[in-house]
Length: 253
Image (tube, rainbow, N blue to C red; front, side, top):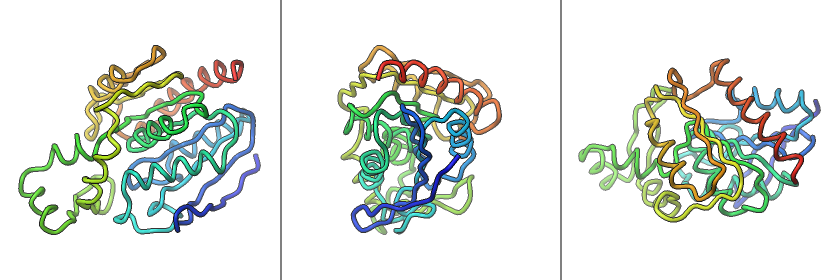
């Protein structure tokens, strides 16, 4: 199972990625907000693809993990461009995009930009439009005032150090919303959502499924699932979904 950690230059940043060669459709893992490619889901998928001889790619957005740049300088458009650059530069042939949390939004934007390259899309607690619908809409007025005045807010996090949220992140995110206009995805879409997710309401998965233009859209709700969905049962569920998608996709592409 040969692979290597490499980098590509994108708009002045060095994006770190790991590519595992294999058959198509390949699998690309897109991490979440302030997450990176070393998480449990990304590692499990790398091992799963390696055992199957399936091509696999994982990477860090600029300002994340082993890529260069400052997290607070990042925006939705910047990170989406990173994802498209990985798709264009590192991979060949049809790909299955697996996006976790913010990575689900990035996967949708990448799929909208390169629909002919996508074999399927899997969202894990997908959070499209989260800067507007979850952050800005959920902030009390005093936090909004801090952002307007200072341009930055340090938001407490259950997952480690506070998140540095900038007003630029909020405002630029409005240019990339996917739930306000038609979103036609002419390939299988699978959404996996925990019903005990404290960050993304489980009904958001139903809203996204309803919004997507396309007939092959399925939602799986895990009643005891949290936001990360990285427990052994969650990983097994994800692998089962990919088993079905790689089988269905590889024969028709």
